Image (cartoon, rainbow, N blue to C red; front, side, top):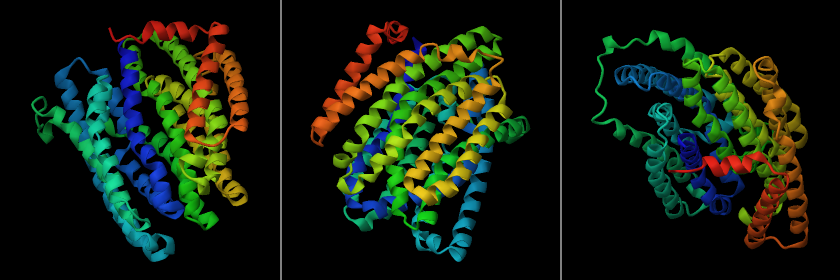
Length: 480
C-alpha cells in the first residue's frame, strides 16, 4: 500500500536527519564534554530562529499545494517556482538579520561575544534551509529519493566527525560538519529536477497568492520551534552554565529519534488528506484520522514507557557516568512522544488540509506561550528538569486545545477507542522491564535485553487483548 510505503520511507528520512548525531553522541559526549556539546547546542538554538524566517511555512504549505495539483505538470512547475522564489527572498532576509544579530548581540552580550566564531559557523544552517525542496517531493508522495540521497550525505558526515573531531578544541569543526552536511543534503535534491524542470520567466510567476497562506503557515511553525528551541536558549542565561544546554539537548535528541517514528505518519498523510479535502471526501478524511490516531498511540505509548524504564541506566553507559543527569530529563520528557504524536495527527491531517490555519496557529501559539511562562520559574527552580517539565505541560496544552476546537467535527472518544489497550500493555511492559533493570547491571547487553523484553511483553499483551492494530499492520504493510 502506497501510504504504508511512504510511512516507512518518511520514517527513514526523519531518522536519517537524527541518526548520524545519535551514532556519534557517545563519542562527542566524551571528546567535547558538557561544555562543548552545550556550546554547539546553544549556538544552534540561536541560528534556528533565523532558519525559521528563511523557511517560513514553506515545507508544510508547499507540500500541500503540490499535492493539490500533482496531476497537472505545468501548473505544478509553476507553483514550485513561485513558492521557491518566496523561499529565496525569505532566505536573503534571514541572512541579513542573522549577520546583524551577531554584530549587535556581540556588542551587548558577553556570552554571544564569547561564542561569536561559532555563531558564524552556524550561518550555513540558514543556507541549508534556503535550498530545502523536500516539500516538493513530499507533495508528490515521493519519499524514496529523499531517503536514498540523504543516506550518503549522512554517512559521510558521520565518518568525518570521527576523523576530524579529536579534542575539546574541535567544537568549530563539529558545528561546521553538521551545518554543511545539511547544505549538501538539500542541494543534492535539486539534481532530481535537472532535465525535468526549466527556469521560468519572472513575469510569468505570480507570487501574490502565496504570501498570505505562507505567512499563516509561518506563524504556527515559529510558535512551535520557539518553544522547542527556547529551553536550550534560556538554560545558559538562567543557570549560568552552557553545559545545561548540552544536558537538555542530549535528552531531547533521544526523544526526537522516537518522535521521528511517530510524526512520520503526519507528513506522509498530509498530501493524501489534502487530496481527499480537494475532492470533497470528508468522510474518508475522518476515517483516516481515527486510524492515524490509533496507529500513533500504538507506537507512542510503548516508546514512552520503554524510554522511561530503560533511559536512566542506559545513559550511564551510552554517554558516560558524568552524563547521568540526562536520564532524569529524559524520563520527564517521555510523555511528549504521545502528545506530539496526537497533535501531529490533528494538526497536519485535519486542520492544515482543511485550511483551518488560524485554529492550528492558536494551538501551537498557546503551547509556546505556556512554555515560555513556565520556563522562567521552572528553570530557575529546577534547572534542566524544570525545562523538561515545562515542555511536557506545553505539549499537552497543544493537543488539548486542538481536541477542543475539533470536538464538533470529530468525536473525541473515537480517537482514543483503543487507547486503553496500549496503556495497559505499556504499564505492564514498564513494570516488567523496570524490575529487570533493578536486578541487572548497567551496560549495552542489559539494555538490549531490556528492549527485547519490553517489545515482547507489549506485543504479547496486545495479542492477548486482541488489539485490532495487529491485524491492520499485517494487512497494510506490504510492498507488493
